[in-house]
Image 1 (tube, rainbow, N blue to C red):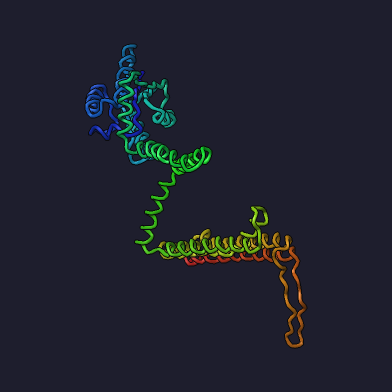
Image 2: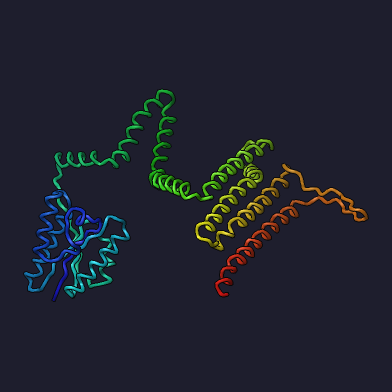
Length: 378
């Protein structure tokens, strides 16, 4: 019975510290690799895991069975690339040695996530988790703190916020009472945790790169995005100004409807500007249009009309805005009577306009998307 004893290194420490061809197999080759890794980094837990691979293979051979010691390793290019590399190495080991089963040796929960990949290719009889024993004394704690302080990312993530809190808290405490000081510090810590937890710093870095690429490539969407941001600010300003002119001081439902009523036209224009920029970029870059991109401007306009209609309905029922009045008009012998729209009629008109705009968008998108297919058929 042939057993494959394989050590897993998902993080790619083995190829990073040793010049080897993966996968590594054979007890003698593995001993040379362990020696090279141990000299490069004596504190690395991977060395202990590879020693465990040799130990398990030796125990299996002592029982009279045949065992092959091996190690597979991922890459540092990303999780998906690392898992694909390890899957390919497992396939090569199975093809070369044709084992009946496998014993997997891991040293972290990160490596344990690869078990389904291995189990889908060969029967796994055992999973050996290596836990390195550490000295629990003052000296061990000292070296752990030393390693922690040497990590630049951890220093910036943990020590900097603690230092800011320790500096700001006494200052706030001297200027105000304990409740305000504790509340302010808690708010700052909560904001920082959300900032790191949602990865806002990474998103801002990506946004900066995307803006630079857009500027260098001459995309129109960068200009329309700036226009949209300006229109959105105008919408917010107009909404706040319109709400204040109506005399709505308290935060209530009518206040929210008032803000929506005055700001939605500008916000809809901002969304339309962004959508048009994306459409133009697709035409210039790919020389074709997707149906979803064509629907965006019409969808933004339709939503703006519907929201405007509902907000106007609530404000008119609350007597904060006047009804729509159509004055009587005479066109020669034709006389048109005056008409005052009720709140329900006004809402119905805006909802109907939104539906019509949405249907027009669907029709335009279908017509434009079908033209290339007809040209291709010809």
